Length: 109
Length: 115
Image (tube, rainbow over all chains, first blue to last red; front, side, top):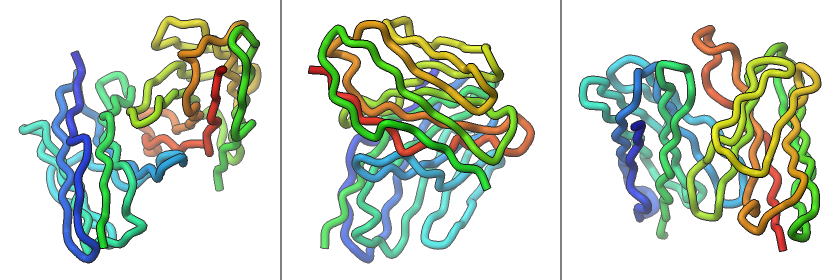
């Protein structure tokens, strides 16, 4: 079956750095996405990786290793507004998005 | 630019009542359209997706149905709601797979409470 694993919840301190991991087992791979979802709101697109390596976008970076079935989202200089759930999703061989359950990130002052 | 609309934003319905949620997309043609449900504190569950008018694929057997009467309109329906239908319903669109716009863009969602 297809499976995406990410931690259920993480806590970090304002101004610090946090890394949210995602491991996946899917039938084929056509890219990996990270989305941010604030409570009660719709998910918003953060990043897309299809090749191995690091993609940097401001305070957020996303890394992919296809051989290991592994990705992480790195958030730097954490702000209180970064408190949200972070969803990992993989596009499989049929171009269907397989979603992880999300990681709830709690930022403390 | 593309925008996606959903309505209503919130809905409270009694058990056994019908449901109709509507989603429309502007600024793009022939999008792939999706309906998801998210239970409180849980991940996204894909309910239906559509690659064109009248073409609907169902991912989860249940008492819900979907229709796509126009290219940029996607409707989620039920004849009789169950308590378990409560949740946050999200409509999303994406471009044609493999042609550059693979990420999905979400509407604001409808929070449905069945009592």
